[in-house]
Picture: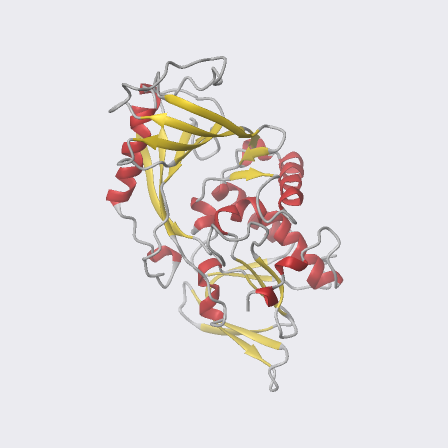
Length: 361
């Protein structure tokens, strides 16, 4: 158990908290996510954190319906069927009339929800600081090891504001730098796909249905569509939508160096407008953004695998990365598991043997 009187914890963040995918993701959470060994635990932790800290108001926590949906764009909806309230929820009145050609619910308020990831991550960092965790804005440059290489000894970082180099003596190091983890640990081979997303302000509040569409004609993208509730940042509802990942982009030095390609954001917006009602389609795009995610496997491979979570072959060296699109969903469970490993010597909350890095290194 963490005790501020006994333990000194330092968090190194290169630029600012939640500047990467943990702040730019959609924020969908589900007990049925992958990896299955930690997803249910993490969903419960999301619920308990929201209850304890008023997450509904502070980071937009709410339970939702989620569905795979087939949509015909308004540019070619001659073959679309009429909206059938017996088959499709009437609450989806913010879709373009007649655009729905297929609907399959994959999540309900019992097992699915959402949060605003930027607000959630910032809140957790604040809670940590209240408990005497030190947060430093600085880029980690190197991990130091004992003479025989069997244990970690130090971490060297460059301060963001002063550009000065500092070395911290340590007993344990958790590398949780997402796609940048391999810069500190070169033997970690990670995929780093880049995704673009937009945030839209609609003209009215819309129902909480997380949609994973297939949009026709195929010349259009099929972006995820996430309505979001109002939050402390915006006194109005928003709609988050993300397009497909690209795998040919070079990872920049820092998350603040990520280049947003307006054309890709516009492609997402064009697809959203083609299947939504005027309340959304005539809305205002208030954010265009991009981020990189960390993958340790291709999507079509074994769904039982997931993030690297666990000890390395060096005493005191730990790895927590590779969460892909389920980063915010699984973050609470990964944090709990890592704390149990480091502070208590064993994991009590879940069986995470399948997530040991030895399976990938």
